[in-house]
Length: 251
View (cartoon, one colour):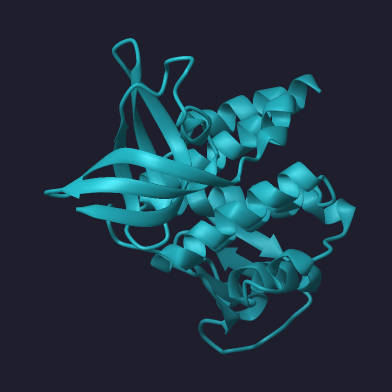
């Protein structure tokens, strides 16, 4: 059966001298594996669409849940990422996270929109790269069902305070009056501005998501909080994140 899907290549694996397996995040079938025959040959017409981060309209042969590439038309290549090692390494981190949390053949169009928008702004260069990282991390958690409860204190329901504690494991807020003698090891203190940023990223409509203009002095703290939240919620660290950090350190 022939099927048409829009999707982005998140991982490629070589098979033999001329073939590839592709992990593609698609609009209608979620994450799928596609066998691309002969695409490593110099004269292959499908070679460009099998590159990392190429977003294309794929025409696929499907049989028994297995997909084989027939043809494809590129929509957006994100070629600019290959010209900047920091941006490319951050894109690799985004991809590794999605590959870890995505469910095969279960669509999540908001996750697809999130990665496409993040890569777009990475290439465009008009958004702070640290803010893009924080936005991707927290919003991805929200879109896969791990959205934190940031509406107010989980006990007294206080909406705002000069200082609150974000329970990273429980995904909830405590005001200073309610946190009591709980361990602060897996908590992050939030002032009103940091709480506003987290609420905006986790809860705002996708159309407005990238309109956040976080203050520069808050970016490091915001990145640390969203990164720790992902690490604790998912129970693992990602090698691509460590590589991205090493690139930033070198720069």
